Image 1 (cartoon, helix red, strand yellow):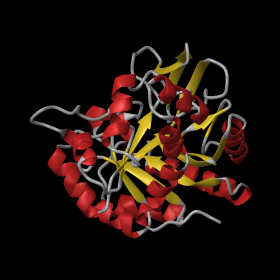
Image 2 (cartoon, rainbow, N blue to C red):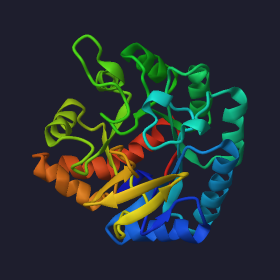
Image 3 (cartoon, helix red, strand yellow):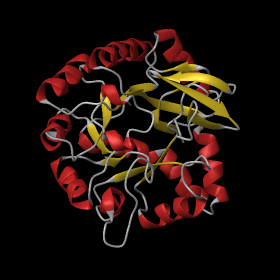
Length: 296
């Protein structure tokens, strides 16, 4: 079975979207660890810079069919849940901004992470879904009701469950609680031992069977050496396998590869077949939720 990573920013010392050669090298670094198919994730930057990186990934896709498309993690994110995204580049999903990204990608965007509480977000979700793009609820302060409205508008995924979102609480289930209760929603999780506790990881698999997507959120240091890297505009320090914004404790992606995620799941007591499904079949199902079909 093919391991499929639908959310990764790079590896092997290279970030997706900087150069065509670097994009292909990042893909090759993950393939050397057992991953077969990937979606290239781009972090938030000003629209012109994101459009330029979209163009780079499109060139790489023409050379390497194992690159399935592009994931835009931003720029339509909540400032209070920005994580490793530059605040000055965060914007609202206006019709013009949505059009610029769709036009630049010309059908190559597979998913986009968005905070559904932003002004204009529900209309943007509908446009992206109609264009075959899977909208992922993430980097958000939204309530469960706002998440449900996003799923009704066409969103079908949650970006890295438990991270960059409100927690589940008794009277405020939040976006993850809404997703767990909605069979239309697939749920990403980073199983690297840093982002999510093993008990929470195992609980997620039990609560949403067949809907969990293992992904890496890897940055350039994955399958490479530790040290200092750039994630978009921001500097990241990697030590002990943990990537943080330099000078802070803010996690900035991961150094994870999918084969390692399977081991982390096993250590959390998750049956091997369930973890393998979450790294092979389910990621493709999530990408196909808005009509896209993987090449034969």
